Image 1 (cartoon, rainbow, N blue to C red):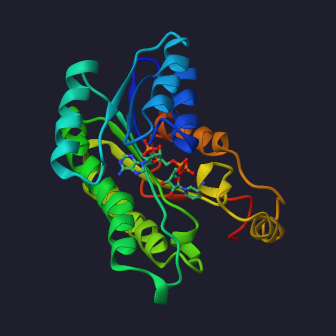
Image 2 (cartoon, rainbow, N blue to C red):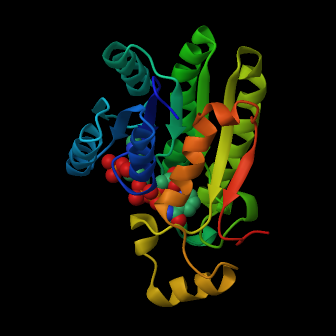
Image 3 (cartoon, helix red, strand yellow):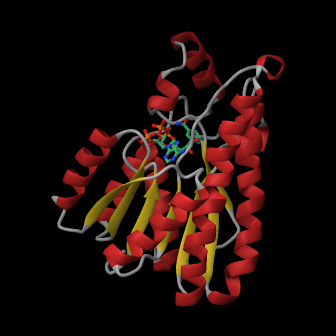
Length: 246
Ligand code: NDP
């Protein structure tokens, strides 16, 4: 489905990003994986992808760093010739009740989850507009739609990402570049493994499908949004949450 395409996935070494990277490779796309600290996971994922017979390279970069993301995009273009798919998946959380939240907890989450997407999209978007081709997928969250206790920083970043997605979609549509957001519910990754078992049980009670999602549930939609089948979809926010927020 994605033969001849290259996808750049931030946070592609682990969790949801890793599943997206593997699924893109299954569909014959070449893959550029961006990681920040998890070098071994990045190398393992790269090995798995290369075994599928597509090209894959890994890049260490902090998406919150504007200058570093510019250099990253230049390097990926040098290595792959170009790329057509950008998945802004890198994200962190620093959950605390608002009254206990430190300024740093707010700033770092906004810097990675929201400004990181701006940095990547600005540099990649310039390329996409020039080549009149591109798919941008932002991994938001249902927290950005419904809010969540202990996540005023994270929910603000993820809600901001939705406004960012819609504005980018409008700005880039004339050149056939699409931009969509995926809003996952609770997905079984390192991010949710940190939840206490009793809290996880309470969450599952709230989900109509009565289970956490898998990273592959997000990856499937990502591949679809990157494909020719989704060429007329832009500015959308699609929930993948087992019905949590209906
Ligand atoms: P993980 O913690 O497993 O993975 C997060 C990834 O983001 C890691 O690969 C990490 O790389 C990367 N990352 C974090 N900060 C930076 C940075 N500054 N620069 C570059 N890369 C960075 O989380 P998930 O896979 O669960 O989450 C992926 C995305 O999905 C996030 O945006 C998250 O907010 C979102 N999401 C997740 C949900 C869930 O239930 N799991 C629900 C809703 C949304 P490294 O380890 O190398 O630092």
